[in-house]
Length: 233
Ligand SMILES: Nc1ncnc2c1ncn2[C@@H]1O[C@H](COP(=O)(O)OP(=O)(O)O)[C@@H](O)[C@H]1O
Ligand SMILES: [Mg+2]
Image (cartoon, rainbow, N blue to C red; front, side):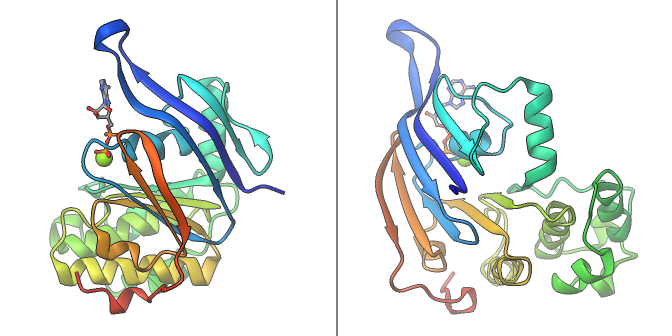
């Protein structure tokens, strides 16, 4: 079985002379339970790629299968189901609901899932159990991002997609957040894709993929993987 396979993905904006290729023939294969880091500078196509994998954007051309099922060509209703069933998203900004507590923020997501994980257990895994009754405004950036991760993983997604998740954090909070991402991978066997422009973060990946101008320039197993607490952020 193939877990995730993208073949010749093209994403084109506009036409003719003014056409921009955000992705220009990207193929990748991702193994289950890996931590994959996709590295590239700003404008290289990282977010476009992640959004396609997460079913919140569609390709102009190419083929995409997830657990051997074809996702490319699906209509928005079916993409929504794909996303709901399989995908957790974490962004640079935390997207928490300001007037709900930490526990309530997680609970509202759990309520529309068919088989959510236990809320207390997830809060404990992410080290936010003591913050359950606080509101987002009463948390640091790193704590808010851990709540955002809890919201993404409560449905026990097969794939967790992280778009510059430490982009707004200081180095200590970045390290904390990445340690917890690694813990999610270990505890729940979640496959994780992190996109970043930060080379140091790549060291914690099982696989490192480099993207430039909408093309993959390298894709290698990381022979020198280190745990997140060894990163010098
Ligand atoms: N809606 C859009 N219309 C036109 N160009 C876009 C649009 N979205 C992204 N792009 C272009 O596609 C390229 C890749 O963007 P993006 O995937 O956001 O890169 P990254 O996340 O690596 O910074 C950039 O050149 C960007 O300007
Ligand atoms: Mg981006």
